[in-house]
Image 1 (tube, rainbow over the protein chains, first blue to last red):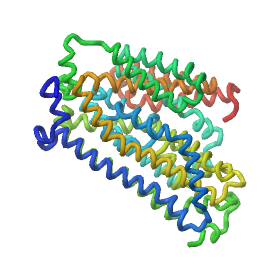
Image 2 (cartoon, one colour):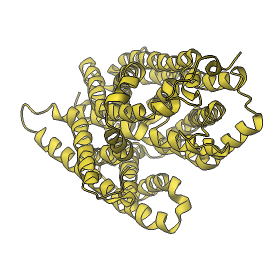
Image 3 (cartoon, rainbow over the protein chains, first blue to last red):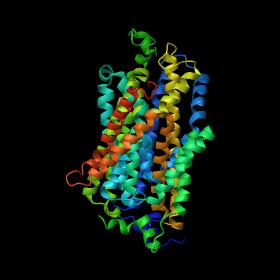
Length: 262
Length: 255
């Protein structure tokens, strides 16, 4: 192995060398074990409802009808099922993956929360500080989200339907995405302070969305994944190379530099 | 087991008995189960984060700050999701709306999946052909679709993690450059995808971006730091207000 420094290798390889209580290795182990178990539990609960209706509600639903319906959904979305986890992994990191894909509304709620929290304490995405900040921010977001869903949809929902004018809910339904994304783009540009990556991302995303997708509409669903991958590759080649890159590199995985701000 | 709705007299607002079926207690229990699982997961993660914080150079105070910041930043988006969910209650009933729209999936994906699935049995969401059977088939298809997402996450995350470790060893700078580039690429691409939809989408996007820019500038002033957390909520609200005005002004066909 050609690990550039002892600190860098400490993170990846190590339950033996640094598994003292409270190490990042232990955090990794706990979150991947419990993250997976809770996600499986969530998966079971989310399927239990419809399965109950299909098998016990005596509605005369045929297996063929179920298969046809699922096949239609799968035909439209199976690319996204695989692409989305890959797209968000570099941003979220392994621990938050199990949170994000169960809590849902990733791009319009969880990523903005994580980003703003990281900016708040000056932690960079991809570092341990950034990773923990994202985990805590997603927990905070989940707390607010569960509470507001239970109260406003679960308990007050039917009453709210009767008082909120339809014109308002319609506008929210249609325009919620641009309303969130406009703000989040600015937040990301300001807090990441990556001029080159921003420029690359802007050009790539514009080319993909305004040139490639209109030419090849079938790529529409994969457009964001394409933008992310191309931005990654070009961003990597045009990155600002510090003369002392090895030191910066070490901070990427074990962040002595990052902890200076703590 | 007899169909729940055939026993209860279907109210006028629910001609096919879909809502009577969709609001059955069993479905409520399953929905609350998902809530509980997420709550338990959050607690486990927070305990793990608290323990690991010193090793990552994070103070206990910063842990609290990030939790609070994440919570406040989520208020705007959460309320937006709530409004959309309320609008869909009449179609899916409360438990399915809570789980599919509120959690796990997202508005765009779930409504698309629902109408595709309903279409395969010749039903149109909310139309006269949308009956209990159509609801069950649709709910099944969208739930199984959502489960595939989680399945992909369960399978791919360990693989990607191995790849990440390998790349980190080859060149650790990857781990600082990649997430930032991925984040920027993802948000700019998602944002630009809204532009061709209509001029109101563009106005909404621009208004929200402008408000956020102003919030972040003002947040540099002493005493205005709270805007760093509340900025997103304010920007979403004013962005939607701009959308409402632009649409009322006739810039786009009614939603």
